Picture 1 (cartoon, rainbow, N blue to C red):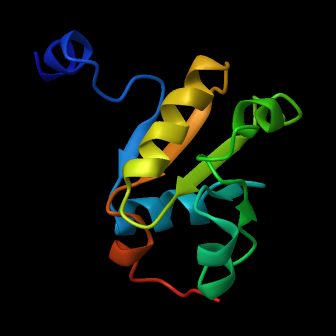
Picture 2 (picture 1 turned 90 degrees about the vertical axis):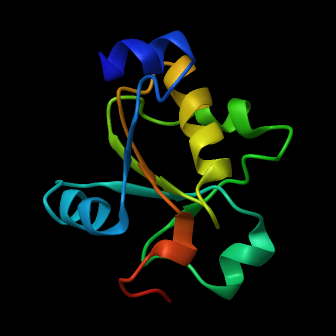
Length: 115
């Protein structure tokens, strides 16, 4: 029933939103994950998850950059609070990415290590 309501009102389609513990656990158990920081370059320089690739979702060429990425790889997407990463996941799912995980609450909710 909950899934029906989510779909009816445009909930998370094509990706999974995980809290920081579940995100960390899934990340740890995934072979060759791609960690994607969708914040601005300045935000990325200040603090990020280890080995995170930075592509700003607000950039006009975000979708174009996605076209050069492997759609079958697992992507772990985050931003500051979870809003931009949710937007990015929706865009990525629409482009055909098959395994997407959004960090609920963004990096400010992350209790793991950052660099």
